[in-house]
Amino acid sequence: MAFTICVFAGSNPGLNSEYTEMARELGYHIAAQGCRLVYGGSRNGLMGQVADGVLSNGGEVVGIMPVDLFKDEIRHSGLTNLIEVSSMHERKAIMSGMADAFIALPGGLGTFDELFEILCWMQIGIHQKPIGLLNIRGYFNPLLAMISHSVSEGFAPKHAMKMLDMNADPEYLLELMRGQVDHSNKGLGNARFPSQR
Image (cartoon, rainbow, N blue to C red; front, side, top):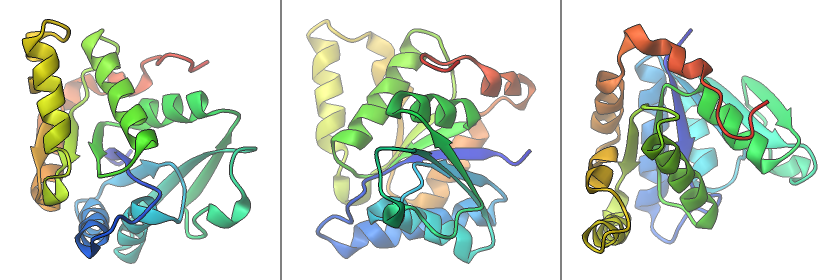
Protein backbone atom coordinates (compact mmCIF):
# COMPACT_ATOMS: atom_id res chain seq x y z
CA MET A 1 0.00 0.00 0.00
CA ALA A 2 1.36 3.42 -0.96
CA PHE A 3 2.29 5.90 1.75
CA THR A 4 -0.85 8.01 2.16
CA ILE A 5 -0.87 11.74 2.78
CA CYS A 6 -4.11 13.25 4.05
CA VAL A 7 -4.36 16.88 2.98
CA PHE A 8 -6.61 19.48 4.59
CA ALA A 9 -7.01 22.60 2.45
CA GLY A 10 -9.36 25.42 1.57
CA SER A 11 -12.20 25.04 -0.92
CA ASN A 12 -11.38 28.60 -2.00
CA PRO A 13 -8.17 29.60 -3.83
CA GLY A 14 -7.22 32.58 -1.68
CA LEU A 15 -6.33 36.03 -2.95
CA ASN A 16 -2.75 35.38 -4.02
CA SER A 17 -1.68 33.04 -6.82
CA GLU A 18 1.13 31.67 -4.66
CA TYR A 19 -1.45 29.67 -2.71
CA THR A 20 -2.65 27.77 -5.76
CA GLU A 21 0.86 27.36 -7.17
CA MET A 22 2.19 25.82 -3.95
CA ALA A 23 -0.87 23.60 -3.54
CA ARG A 24 -0.39 22.20 -7.02
CA GLU A 25 3.34 21.78 -6.39
CA LEU A 26 2.63 19.78 -3.23
CA GLY A 27 0.39 17.49 -5.26
CA TYR A 28 3.08 17.03 -7.88
CA HIS A 29 5.59 15.96 -5.24
CA ILE A 30 3.11 13.64 -3.54
CA ALA A 31 2.94 11.69 -6.81
CA ALA A 32 6.66 12.06 -7.52
CA GLN A 33 7.50 10.44 -4.20
CA GLY A 34 5.15 7.53 -4.88
CA CYS A 35 2.58 8.60 -2.31
CA ARG A 36 -1.21 8.52 -2.44
CA LEU A 37 -3.43 11.52 -1.68
CA VAL A 38 -6.58 11.26 0.42
CA TYR A 39 -8.63 14.43 0.80
CA GLY A 40 -12.15 15.84 0.77
CA GLY A 41 -12.79 15.15 -2.93
CA SER A 42 -13.59 18.65 -4.22
CA ARG A 43 -12.37 20.20 -7.44
CA ASN A 44 -12.60 23.68 -5.92
CA GLY A 45 -9.96 25.90 -4.38
CA LEU A 46 -6.69 24.60 -2.97
CA MET A 47 -8.27 21.18 -2.52
CA GLY A 48 -8.69 20.84 -6.26
CA GLN A 49 -5.22 22.21 -6.97
CA VAL A 50 -3.53 19.57 -4.81
CA ALA A 51 -5.52 16.83 -6.54
CA ASP A 52 -4.69 18.27 -9.97
CA GLY A 53 -1.01 18.26 -9.08
CA VAL A 54 -1.10 14.60 -8.06
CA LEU A 55 -3.04 13.55 -11.15
CA SER A 56 -0.81 15.54 -13.51
CA ASN A 57 2.11 13.42 -12.35
CA GLY A 58 0.32 10.08 -12.60
CA GLY A 59 -0.51 9.72 -8.91
CA GLU A 60 -3.46 8.23 -7.03
CA VAL A 61 -6.17 10.42 -5.51
CA VAL A 62 -8.89 9.23 -3.12
CA GLY A 63 -11.75 11.62 -2.39
CA ILE A 64 -14.04 11.27 0.63
CA MET A 65 -17.35 13.13 0.31
CA PRO A 66 -20.66 13.16 2.20
CA VAL A 67 -23.49 12.05 -0.08
CA ASP A 68 -26.09 14.68 0.77
CA LEU A 69 -24.04 17.75 1.66
CA PHE A 70 -22.41 18.60 -1.66
CA LYS A 71 -23.65 18.79 -5.22
CA ASP A 72 -22.10 16.64 -7.92
CA GLU A 73 -20.56 19.58 -9.74
CA ILE A 74 -17.98 20.23 -7.01
CA ARG A 75 -16.69 16.67 -7.03
CA HIS A 76 -13.36 16.30 -8.77
CA SER A 77 -13.95 14.41 -12.00
CA GLY A 78 -10.48 12.86 -12.08
CA LEU A 79 -10.53 11.00 -8.77
CA THR A 80 -8.94 7.56 -8.76
CA ASN A 81 -11.48 6.53 -6.15
CA LEU A 82 -14.49 8.27 -4.60
CA ILE A 83 -15.78 7.11 -1.23
CA GLU A 84 -19.21 8.44 -0.31
CA VAL A 85 -20.05 8.78 3.36
CA SER A 86 -23.09 9.85 5.36
CA SER A 87 -21.63 12.72 7.39
CA MET A 88 -18.74 15.11 7.90
CA HIS A 89 -17.75 13.15 11.01
CA GLU A 90 -17.48 9.93 9.02
CA ARG A 91 -15.52 11.75 6.32
CA LYS A 92 -12.89 12.95 8.80
CA ALA A 93 -12.66 9.58 10.54
CA ILE A 94 -12.09 7.68 7.28
CA MET A 95 -9.56 10.21 5.98
CA SER A 96 -7.67 10.03 9.26
CA GLY A 97 -7.76 6.25 9.38
CA MET A 98 -6.34 5.96 5.85
CA ALA A 99 -3.55 8.48 6.43
CA ASP A 100 0.06 7.84 7.32
CA ALA A 101 0.64 11.58 7.77
CA PHE A 102 -1.26 14.88 7.53
CA ILE A 103 -0.49 18.15 5.78
CA ALA A 104 -2.66 21.24 6.20
CA LEU A 105 -2.65 24.06 3.67
CA PRO A 106 -4.19 27.49 4.07
CA GLY A 107 -7.96 27.35 4.38
CA GLY A 108 -10.94 28.57 6.33
CA LEU A 109 -13.00 27.25 9.21
CA GLY A 110 -13.40 23.77 7.75
CA THR A 111 -9.63 23.40 7.40
CA PHE A 112 -9.11 24.62 10.96
CA ASP A 113 -11.73 22.14 12.19
CA GLU A 114 -9.93 19.25 10.51
CA LEU A 115 -6.51 20.36 11.72
CA PHE A 116 -7.49 20.95 15.34
CA GLU A 117 -9.43 17.70 15.55
CA ILE A 118 -6.41 15.70 14.41
CA LEU A 119 -4.20 17.66 16.84
CA CYS A 120 -6.61 16.89 19.67
CA TRP A 121 -6.61 13.20 18.74
CA MET A 122 -2.80 13.24 18.89
CA GLN A 123 -2.85 14.97 22.28
CA ILE A 124 -5.13 12.32 23.81
CA GLY A 125 -3.19 9.44 22.27
CA ILE A 126 -5.51 8.23 19.52
CA HIS A 127 -2.70 8.51 16.96
CA GLN A 128 0.94 9.60 16.66
CA LYS A 129 1.01 10.34 12.94
CA PRO A 130 3.05 13.36 11.85
CA ILE A 131 1.22 16.63 11.15
CA GLY A 132 2.66 19.33 8.92
CA LEU A 133 1.66 22.85 7.94
CA LEU A 134 2.51 24.16 4.47
CA ASN A 135 3.09 27.71 5.60
CA ILE A 136 2.54 29.60 2.35
CA ARG A 137 3.07 33.35 2.76
CA GLY A 138 3.32 32.87 6.54
CA TYR A 139 -0.38 31.96 6.65
CA PHE A 140 -0.11 29.82 9.77
CA ASN A 141 2.09 32.18 11.80
CA PRO A 142 -0.87 33.67 13.73
CA LEU A 143 -2.22 30.18 14.45
CA LEU A 144 1.13 29.07 15.90
CA ALA A 145 1.20 32.25 18.00
CA MET A 146 -2.28 31.40 19.35
CA ILE A 147 -1.20 27.87 20.28
CA SER A 148 1.90 29.27 21.98
CA HIS A 149 -0.29 31.72 23.88
CA SER A 150 -2.55 28.87 24.97
CA VAL A 151 0.51 27.03 26.31
CA SER A 152 1.82 30.08 28.14
CA GLU A 153 -1.59 30.66 29.74
CA GLY A 154 -1.77 27.06 30.96
CA PHE A 155 -4.53 25.76 28.70
CA ALA A 156 -2.51 23.59 26.31
CA PRO A 157 0.28 21.16 27.22
CA LYS A 158 3.87 22.33 26.92
CA HIS A 159 4.55 19.86 24.13
CA ALA A 160 1.74 21.24 21.95
CA MET A 161 4.14 23.26 19.78
CA LYS A 162 6.12 20.09 19.06
CA MET A 163 3.06 18.36 17.63
CA LEU A 164 3.37 20.34 14.39
CA ASP A 165 6.05 20.74 11.74
CA MET A 166 5.90 23.81 9.55
CA ASN A 167 7.67 24.74 6.32
CA ALA A 168 6.96 26.75 3.18
CA ASP A 169 8.66 24.27 0.83
CA PRO A 170 6.19 21.56 -0.33
CA GLU A 171 8.83 19.01 -1.28
CA TYR A 172 10.79 19.42 1.94
CA LEU A 173 7.68 19.27 4.14
CA LEU A 174 6.54 16.07 2.43
CA GLU A 175 9.96 14.48 2.93
CA LEU A 176 9.86 15.55 6.57
CA MET A 177 6.47 13.90 7.08
CA ARG A 178 7.61 10.66 5.47
CA GLY A 179 10.82 10.58 7.47
CA GLN A 180 8.96 10.74 10.78
CA VAL A 181 6.81 7.70 10.23
CA ASP A 182 7.92 4.52 11.96
CA HIS A 183 7.14 1.95 9.29
CA SER A 184 7.20 -0.83 11.88
CA ASN A 185 4.09 0.76 13.41
CA LYS A 186 1.92 1.02 10.31
CA GLY A 187 -0.92 -0.51 12.30
CA LEU A 188 -1.80 3.03 13.34
CA GLY A 189 -3.54 3.25 10.00
CA ASN A 190 -6.13 0.83 11.36
CA ALA A 191 -6.67 2.73 14.61
CA ARG A 192 -10.29 3.40 15.47
CA PHE A 193 -10.87 7.13 15.36
CA PRO A 194 -13.79 8.88 17.07
CA SER A 195 -17.09 8.44 15.17
CA GLN A 196 -15.56 5.73 12.96
CA ARG A 197 -17.64 2.56 13.11
